[in-house]
Amino acid sequence: MAETEEQRKEPVPEELRGKNVAHYSVMLAAYIGARVDANKAIFAFSSTGIGFLVAVSNKLQQLGSCAKIVYVGALLAFFVAACSTLFVYVKNAEAIESYIRNEEEKKKDFELKTWKYVNYISFALGLALLLVFAVLGVF
Image 1 (cartoon, rainbow, N blue to C red):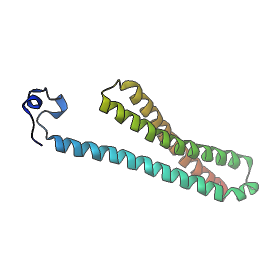
Image 2 (image 1 turned 180 degrees about the vertical axis):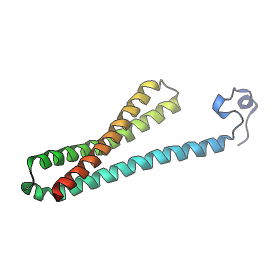
Image 3 (image 1 turned 90 degrees about the vertical axis):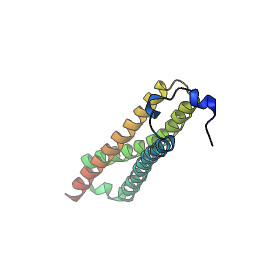
């Protein structure tokens, strides 16, 4: 579709000057896709961690109280990671919608970043506690 004379006269945003809009669109889609894939992986691995911990729950009676505390901590961390992944998806959709509508985006960005960091930290904590639980369960 060819540009109209009015579209040519409109000021071009700084980040688009000298760039092909199609290239910019592809790069943006790739960036969003990569972020979504990372969240999918965290959700899948957190769900797998929950499944693993539930599968070994019958061994808890043989373990000490320290191992039980680590077990509960890992289970909670993976649960928070899985739930926060869903919140990241919701906040990401709201942020994209606000960008499209040119609304105030700072609050949505802050909420998205907060949930993103909760997601990453809880997943890393779950992995660390699962590793500690595995070591405690072996010895």
